[in-house]
Image (cartoon, rainbow, N blue to C red):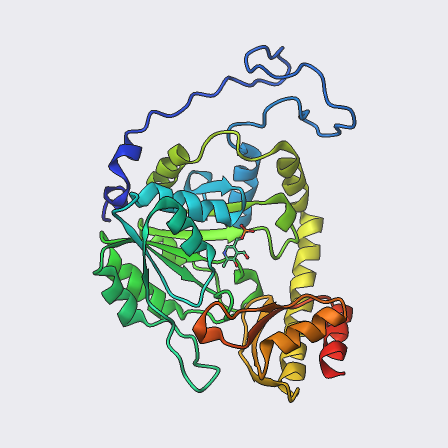
Length: 356
Ligand SMILES: Cc1ncc(COP(=O)(O)O)c(C=O)c1O
């Protein structure tokens, strides 16, 4: 194995961590300058007058079981957005290092890189006239791009907003050939909606490969902000220094604990199946609309389409009280509209609005 931490910012590897005050249940806690009283209406088990634990250990344990990852190889973050932020801050020195992205893709990689003052190397997805082959990852170009000195490459699969997945063989080649050169971050935010297996077995083989997971999509918890970084223990220990203590709020800890119960996960699983069959129904119905020129296949809980006039389509939906999103800030997505798959009745409403 290479030592991936050689890629990290050396000054952060030497960072002296903050030492949080102790917390022990059933003790009088006069060590953290908290209020001794609960706020009116506070129904949490821990009490909102108390700081949350420095790290949500209960969730680390539960998510470890759920993702089948030892808890030493996992870090809980406020959504995978925060994971992207701390990875970039941990590995990219401002004004010196870069990330590599494959647009069109999730725009927050760019945003966090710019906030950190990191450069951005762009390796666009390959285009093809055949929608089944369109927006593929250009593996050779990614590997060449890494020669430009990127510290982190973000690979999003299934990709937002195209819905396309990257074949495991391409990712494996990138992982093999990037050892010692870059951290490969595989963003699996939508993996639960895809037929492809998740990439934990691949990640386990490489200490420079990191997976991002989120509870925002498949368990209906975008509002609690819970993401997970899965990585080698050394990477998790390093990132734990970059992530400040007490970031994960008490209500979110308690709500996620409930949501990871067997009943709630069974409901999430049923809903995934509904969304997948609704996705197929929507793709077929949208493809038949004269206003729609292209519909890309999707492994996620959204569909990308190209309309004759994207703004006109968005306006029609809006007139019916429905929001869909046009992506025209990227020239490769002119007139492209991303539609999140809703409940069957929501999708009926959308189709009626677009057909009228
Ligand atoms: C590809 C991808 N990664 C990460 C995120 C961030 O998810 P969250 O911060 O809600 O976990 C999103 C959100 O839409 C996304 O599309």
